[in-house]
Length: 278
Ligand code: AMP
Image 1 (cartoon, helix red, strand yellow):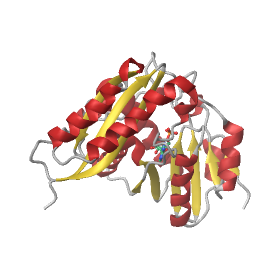
Image 2 (image 1 turned 180 degrees about the horizontal axis):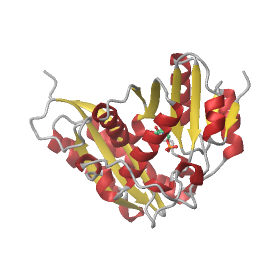
Image 3 (image 1 turned 90 degrees about the vertical axis):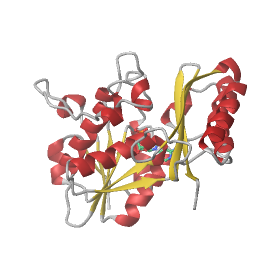
């Protein structure tokens, strides 16, 4: 089947076919991480829709909306190679008419950890994801574990708004040296690369420890060793569903998450681990 490129909501409606639909929302500049999400969608659905939309609502004025990488032609090549059926890439004015009023609130859960570092980010993210769900009407949608708090908030929104959509989480794809793939990695210089690697190294070192206090201390020590080239925003050990910090006696799955600035680039990463297994 030929790839359909839908530039507005009318084209998207025309592209609809019978059968199960999977949505993979992205901001483009597609890499192997996005492609792994698409492959997961491909095995589960008759029709795979990839949205490519750099969402202004989830960037604050001091963030990188205008310099966010846009590589539409090579994104289309990647989608063709992965057997995507429809690429939806609406214009900003099409998504957000000037008279719009209502947006989604991510609640207290959207104001902690990553949400504390990026006020308004998760409200903007949930607003666009809800709109994409309504426009595409997928049976399932695939998101990366790389953005673990985003994934948790989307699951929360689906539960709280009774959305009839199955949410799949997909593992983080990394470079051979451990760096999590990100559209922003292209901004890292040769010199930035060494401090950037401290994120995944810290997470691995932390995950090898047993108790929450040892995990936090070990991971923070690795981040500190990276020196002034790495400016840490936060290191958090949290419940994967709520993103609340876990206590020393917590049992079960936890997420160790980090965010740091390397030069002008902000990077996030996380790993999942099990605490106090019975
Ligand atoms: P983005 O284009 O950065 O908004 O990401 C679109 C989707 O791809 C989100 O669900 C991300 O979590 C996911 N994603 C981004 N990087 C990776 C990665 N390295 N591995 C797996 N999924 C990823």
